[in-house]
Image 1 (cartoon, rainbow, N blue to C red):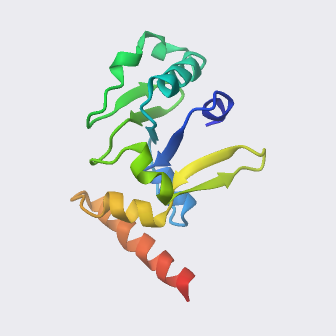
Image 2 (cartoon, one colour):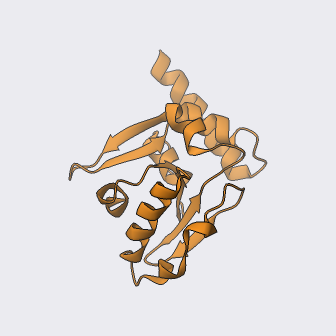
Length: 145
């Protein structure tokens, strides 16, 4: 996340870590990010990835990041799944459903908030996504009281 911020990459943290930032902790094995798909942003992302771990992502090219479903997985210290389109949504589609968490070191992390996660995961058939949706709805209900 630090590299993404230092390189001014436009991204939204989605998946399990975003769920955790919304208040429901569960185990996750990877980091999922949705990136803005412009060529300028992808170049910034690639600069960031070159310095990540052992640099195995150096072989990636801008043309690898097409606006289609699926992710590019970079495995270094931990797996990072990079999306330009997730369940039909782009970065721009979900930006208004994101919030920023600032770490103790002052690092801003843009993440998909509860509303966005419920929208994104609501149609999923995966049991862990359905559990996330249930728990996020409970949290949202408590916050509105």
